Amino acid sequence: MPTTRRPPTHDAAPADPVAVVRSRADALYRAAIECCRQHDRAAKLFGSSDPELEHKHADALCTMCDGSLVELSKAYESAAAHVQLGKDVDWWHKANSLWHASREFLRRHATGDALSKRLSANHPPEQLANLQMEYELEASALLALRHAAEAYRKTRPELD
Figure (cartoon, rainbow, N blue to C red):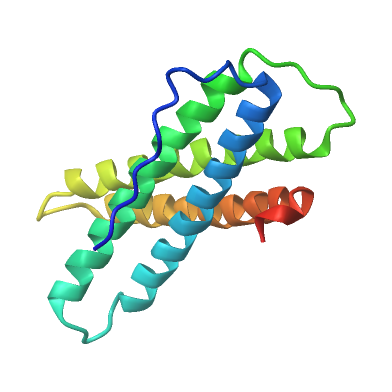
């Protein structure tokens, strides 16, 4: 598999803070789109008779995409914390919505995972109801992430 390396930037002049925020928002958008795509792909495999190995790799890809979303969400947060843009900058507002949707999806996903790991073999029915609710909230958060990403993309047509 070919690898690419970026040239070192240690001699480069400091970038425009707004350009840094925008590039991190673009990266967050791409991570969100890929995260949604991989979770959709894994969901289509659920309950199928496909080989277990495929499920294992689909889960690994979802985990990797979730980790990417976490890192890029934090990178956007750190860049955006020091920049103030006007109220008429549409991409800025959509990027912030995307950031919020990313954080909510990651929170819901982590909550569902933690709850499913705590289920015991002799679980009461209430635990299953709670787990079902968490899965539905996670699915709703994934849909919100998809919508926020699409709204951001509309403000940045060059991303197509």
